[in-house]
Image 1 (cartoon, one colour):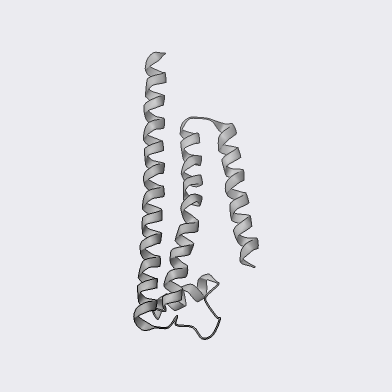
Image 2 (tube, rainbow, N blue to C red):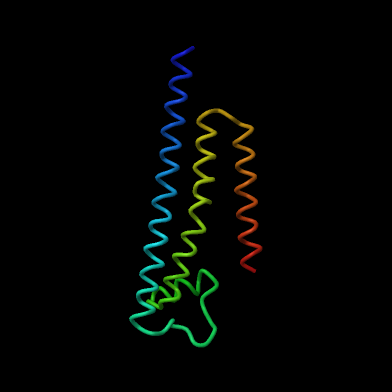
Length: 124
């Protein structure tokens, strides 16, 4: 009985470490991408878009990335920063599933659904 409790605690510690690493790496990657976009903006002196326009859709961001427009690179970094906590929720679903905690799996799936719906509604 004691071995099961200790093993579960070790597994949870490993999962928490994994989640921490995911958050750190996600923030570092997003920050690096935004920094690259900011440096490109200062070097070129232009956003790559005219006037008050900037990419607001995935298609526009990736089209801007293909032509290395600084605002598109910064928007990609911002998008990656937004995705980082979403990825944390996804990892939590797997963590709770590993614990066989079905209630929290369903609650976390509900949180993920709310996040996705909010992003879709916010995008329009």
